[in-house]
Length: 353
Image (cartoon, rainbow, N blue to C red; front, side):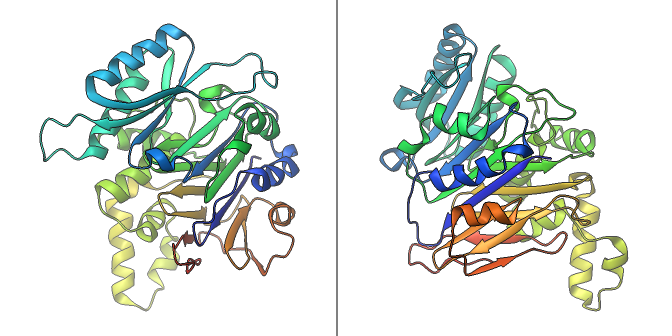
């Protein structure tokens, strides 16, 4: 019973995360204090073309080992401590931020492939450290605490972003620890999730066949990696990728009268059978330039969507929408398995689809 919320400006209008925090605080009973977090987009304009690594570590030794590794494979444009307010949470890991450009040895190496491989190497080979976000012009801030605690701990009033997502965790079958809090991130993808992905074992083995390694002891991690695989590496559209994650039932597919569309769905379901997510879930995913939601095909976990003139809002509860915007122009409840995809537009023409 986790709580999730998000907002995105259609015209790249930036704000701190205060409105989102209020939505998360209202949903406080959906968590138990063992995990909360936020992701924000558009927050590093000075280094917007650099990969921003947020590193969480148990010790200065681990931090320096990460730094040594990064110096070998990246140009480090800037390194800094992530600003925290440790009066809120006194028992916490260490946090460092690195703005990076990869040292590519050949022109045909894809920079995102290079970065992904290095993130996985850090997370699997450097004891006591892992990269909790690695995208450009965005960052993930998460840990053990309530949504209010984590917001204040990371001083998120000091950041300005056009898109924010948040999560309040209630872990039931995986540990409550700093690395297991949401969002989960790889490159530009940030995922928050309410529910249980019972297909985790199948999904994980499928991802491992493509070189991904799941290390963070929670089912949500597979969703972030699946989006990267399906969209960035395999070239699927966002709509096709979410269809893979939450496809219609075979009975519904077989009744479709549009033969071309039915054949497309059948092909996706057969080719990507091991990427399908089973279990009750509601997912909210941020990416470079947009935000989308998807639920399982029985909608055993809630998702509501609201819109005003310049924003689209997502939440687990209607009341949380109104914490973000009192004068909501429209509120809707997507059908089970129906994705809602929103892109920002610098000319203010962004809208849900």
